[in-house]
Image 1: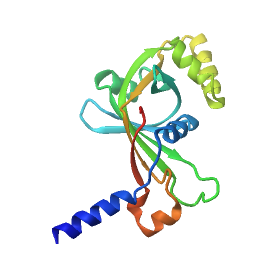
Image 2: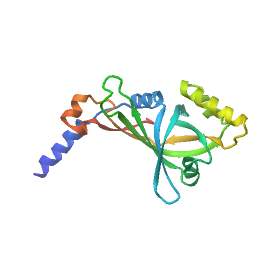
Image 3: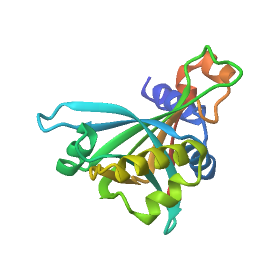
Image 4: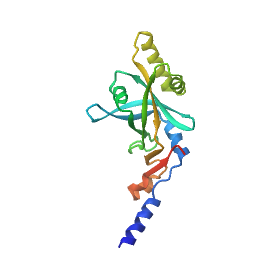
Length: 184
């Protein structure tokens, strides 16, 4: 009985989605919305939708978020820098199905509103340029609470339905799950 269960476990693992590090990094960099989870001072989880941009720095994938220091996510990060992110991937054709997702963890730090790395990343995508312009206008009106979050991602990312066919998942839900070293 034990041999049969070990064999079936190996078969189930072999049937899981295989997602290359390059494919996952491309997906992360092509998206610009994520749900950011932080830990509050009371120890409870908190989450917020954020717009982000990604870049490769020194061979590692790094994400930037523009926000303001008085908001809960920034206060939480100042106290406890460990975060997690969920990035949904919209489906163009099968829009009525749940989105594929990538689940990431990492460490965030607060940076100045004038950080050149954050500004460079936000200038690199349409929504980022709009966000940058809006925050720059707030800065000209005297708002000095604007900042960037720089998120250094842990090497391992989990995903669901990224790199798996719908038919695989219909047959076995676990077939859509993958764990990938994104810093490889």
